[in-house]
Length: 383
Image: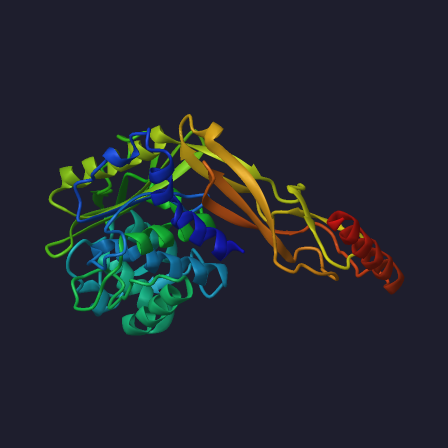
C-alpha cells in the first residue's frame, strides 16, 4: 500500500496545476539544471524540473554513505565509540577533508561528524574500509541499497562523490533517499545541523549556507565539482512541516543558496496539508457479495494527508470505489477498494482502503434468501 501511495503522490503535482489554475503554482522557475521539492511526511512532490535526469551528484553521494553507516550501527555491526584506524588510502583522499592522519584511531562518531559537517572524503573512505574491508566492497552495498529503495537513476562508483565515469543520481532519487534517511534515522539531523567541527585542532565550517540563515533549515548535504556544479539537498521545518529540496548544477554558491531558498519558500508559502483520513477510522462502506452483512466498513491502513494549494479545500471531494467483484470471506486489513480524491470531478490522487473487520461468508440459507429476494426485486422493477 505504501508504494501505491507514493506513486499516486508523485503524480499529484501536474494534476494540481491542471485543476487549480487560479494559483501561482506554475510561475516558479528555479535557476538550476535539475530541481525538486518534496514534502517529507508524505513524499508528495510539489515542484520538479528535469527531476529524473541523471547527473553527477558530487558530495550529495554521502547521504547514501551515511545511510549505510547508520544501518550498520542499527544492526550493531559497529558502535558509536568504536575506534577506526585510518589507512594511507583514506589519508591520501583529495578534496574536502577532516584531515585524518595515517594510523590515527578515530571514533565512528567523529567520522560521522566529519562526513556530515565538513564533507570529509577521507572520513568516508576510512568508514568504508572499516565496515567492508575496501571502498569497492562498500560501494557495492551502496548500489544494492539504491536498487532496494527504488532509486532508478542512481549509480555509485565511490563513497565520496569524487568525479568518476558512470557515477550519477537524479534529483528525484536524491529527494527519495533523503526522505528515507531522515525518516528512518532522524538523529542524522543532529549531525547535519551543526555549523562547525574541530578535529586535529583544525576548525572547519559547514558548507550549507542555509544553516542559520533560512528559517528552520537543519540539513542536509552540499556538493561541488567542476562537472556537477554547485549542488545542495536541503531540508527545513516550518510549522511542523518538513520540506526537502534538491538543486543540481547551479553556477555558484550564491546561485545554489538562492535556488534552494526559492524552492523552499515556494513549498512553505503555497501549500497546506489536508487530512483525508485517519488510520482505523471508518471512511465509508462498500458492497460485499456473499458476506454475512451486505456492507463492509473500510478504513485506511495509514493516516493519509495530501498537500494542496492554499484556499482550494472547497474544490476537493472524496469518492469511495469498491474493489471489483468484492466477495466474502475477507480478512481485516485486506484491500477492499480505493478512496479517490477529486477536484471538479477529476481524480487527482487515490489511496487504498482496507477492510476494517473480518467478514465471513454468509451461510447457504442466507445466500439463498438473498438470491430469491434479488430475483423477485428484479422482476418487480422490470414491471
